[in-house]
Length: 142
Image (cartoon, rainbow, N blue to C red; front, side, top):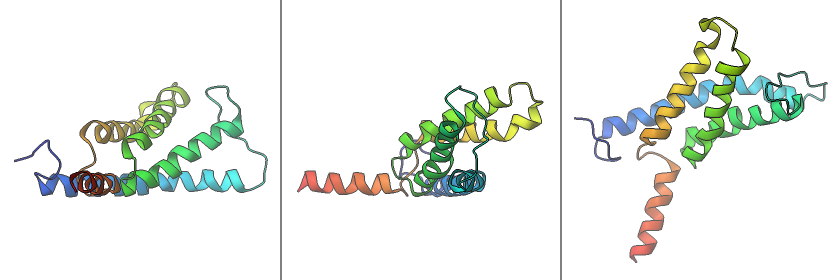
């Protein structure tokens, strides 16, 4: 019933679209307070697990959680956008929450697993990436 090729199973493609939208929108709820902090003009006090500076760490997390989530929702350069998201959730779960109980790292691990799954399986036919692919293929065939 379930196909591994995009477009051959409409249910899988619709599910991938709903997954991308819901997970991306959920991540935006984590990103918006960080985006506000970045542009607040206040002194930035943010975690710096990689030793690159609090402001740089915040900028990278905002880029991943906000901009890459929008790219995930729209399906625009999705696999590329997933790389910073995967990295950010890995750091959140296994560096920032390293010594915390599982309940504190559970959400980051869940996001991480979803991002890896979409990276591996692809994003289905309902995306800007697939639309661009179709347009390019039409131009090549004409």
